[in-house]
Image (tube, rainbow, N blue to C red; front, side, top):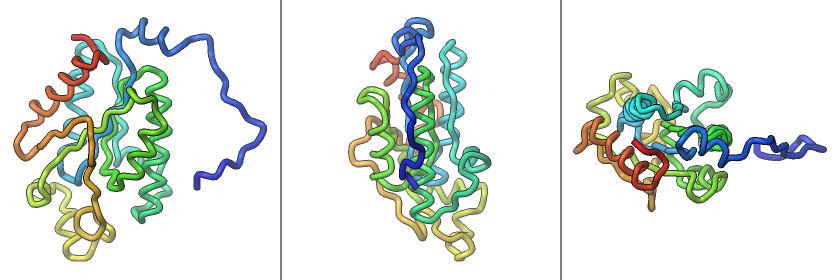
Length: 203
């Protein structure tokens, strides 16, 4: 799926540089890649993080797993190949958002290490922050508002991460937020503190 088919193309640069955008927006564009099991709290944290950043006059946007599958990736299922292509496309979109100097928050299970590493490689070294939203599967099941874990255990949902499909934990993420021990507010504050410390934003 990643084969280059278009020919006679080149990358076009505008007059506005990344540094121009940094100076104007008073922030550094970055992709915050939230990864974890279904029910771990990725989307909830993403929503709170986006809200906190916007309240403080920073430009942020969420790329959410379910939302993306309504449009851009609606032709993809949950097979290993489709999962990889799903993350590949998101990685490319996140790269564009980050280049536009937006603080881009992604909330995807993204179960395979290699896919996450490929998304990281698309960006510059300081433009990708992997955040492992860690939570025991039994806690995720207790939070299962969609009833997906129950259906997966009954065999009604195929290739469900953590039940009938693997989840490969990050080995060296920039951050780990354990949502079985930390509240949404604590998790959000921890990420914001990291952004402040690394000077992506100033509050």
